[in-house]
Image (tube, rainbow, N blue to C red; front, side, top):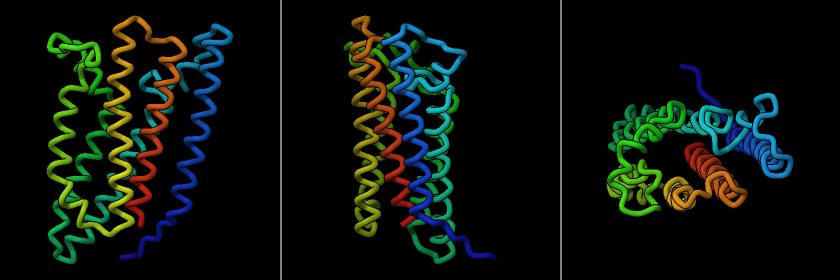
Length: 215
């Protein structure tokens, strides 16, 4: 079997450049929407809008999860060949990352909003998918935390930082956005800036995760 060489710094740099380009696109979107009053511009605004689904930012997030899944699968394969018990955890992470990639691409969580909204007891759960995903997150953290703390220092630190940032953005900021949306403020400049910060944090947290997987 031929050896696989992955240049960690080049991968991380490429991902950071992609995020920078998407951020430039998002800033242009905000200018078009809030400064010039244009929300389409030949389809370019919805193509780069961080608030929209099924566009370039969404597919980039899905791609990040796929890359994380491939790297986790590679680690799982190596650990299984060495008969190390950790391969089960890495296999689990592979499946988790693949699910979140599919969720980003197919907008699975969005389909849960209307059916679950009747159970929402506060405006912060206006985007009702947050409720089941918060429970899933707690279960995953409880199961994987002992495993993560056994990892080497650099990998462990990147995993923890990535998880904290991603959960804070994907759940925490999403709840704040839901509150604003419930108040009828979805689409204003404050709301869109919050969405931009959320999505940017998610993208960067996944790069930190990928960096940890490449160490």
